[in-house]
Figure 1 (spheres, rainbow, N blue to C red):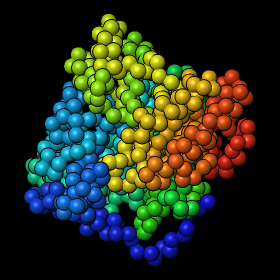
Figure 2 (cartoon, rainbow, N blue to C red):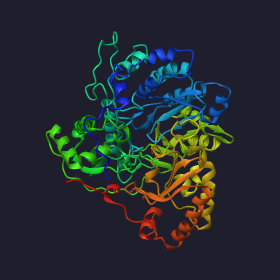
Figure 3 (cartoon, one colour):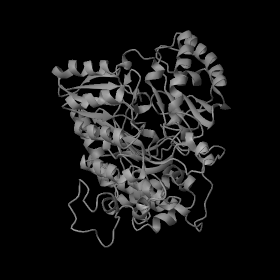
Figure 4 (tube, rainbow, N blue to C red):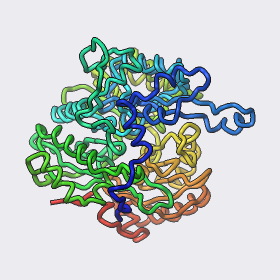
Length: 579
């Protein structure tokens, strides 16, 4: 299915007007922050604030009561860091932890793009919080907005020298493709330069965005780099997916996939999830120029009239994949080489200790829904803070919302394990297969788009699913579970073997049939049903899976083989290749 054709004469959207008039993302943010009358900022400035890494939110649990009291909503800000490939030093972790406790709601949240979000920051604390993040040698620019977002990569890049090289290239992409506007340090840092830039004597009279132009991209743009056999970044969900080809222990280059995207609008068949299409192979030295070509064609061809159709996936399906590739190669002045063979076998995380090529050890911990908080015996925020105080390596966030304590010397493992046990961070040792592979978005109460619970529903749902699975002897079976409070797809629900996509309070679409490798989308099995109907639908399917599966067959693969679900069209299968 393709998007509805939008006439070229259609006027730009309101969001495009805001960007065009923003003076390279400045708007009136400074004036809005200084306004003491309200805890909010204007709608136009809120649109621009996304490019600086923040969203205005309010506590939806309190909306009705505050309305009755004739009070404005309980406005706060979400702030997101830009952390290429999700790498954090212990010193940075301690700063981020302090921000969570002193300026936010007392929690840190690991996102599905290998970074952190802080929730509950009031307006007067927003500028000092961004300044503190900057002082730790990190930042928030372009963590949101119509730009290339945080570039993600396979979460354990020190397994081999080739892994380390691939990680370095992903980090290079993230830095090179970031916006160049000086608005960020004018507004938040009083003119101080970003970490990677020389200090400015004074702000420039006029900014220039050599890659983006004054209106940036039509919509957000995501890049992910996967290193087979792990697809832990869900590479085919990215606007630009890079599959590292390692031969003879050396990084030879990347297969390139374009046009992945998860967002959907309920009831609008012109919107849909799409997997990226493979278009060729490139060498490491071609990576930046190819990425810039994909970004600039989308900049020039993308739909700026209808934001629902503005992602790269719709550009490809409207203009044609072959035409897009031809335009891209004309800008490159060279053709991409044929796709090289590769194979994925997994898109989850590998828990526990793994040794790297240099003898160092790396411990992956399971963090339910990515939320680091101190609740009862689960002292996860404190536990990671204590680890950061003694750890001499670094931390690495994963796209499945978990954390790796990386680069641990063999002699330090016992000390690390003791802190993990003390703070009940060792759940990965005995968790069920479905719990270890569950991903959920934030949803209520802070996300303004949420239609149903997601993160807060996981602790209620998982025990019920585990009860069913245990009854059928499947408690250890690895099954990808994704929960989303709305159809926008932040938790990549369309790649879950089982997925719940929120329709309304307590009601979800039940989607089934993705694979365990991130190479096939799922499909709707039941629409707009409650928990009882969800469990009733899954129970007989679990029974059949237990009785009829082959030795290594995943749940999603079984549902297709057993004809519970029909085969999908090629656009929803990642093996589609353009010659």
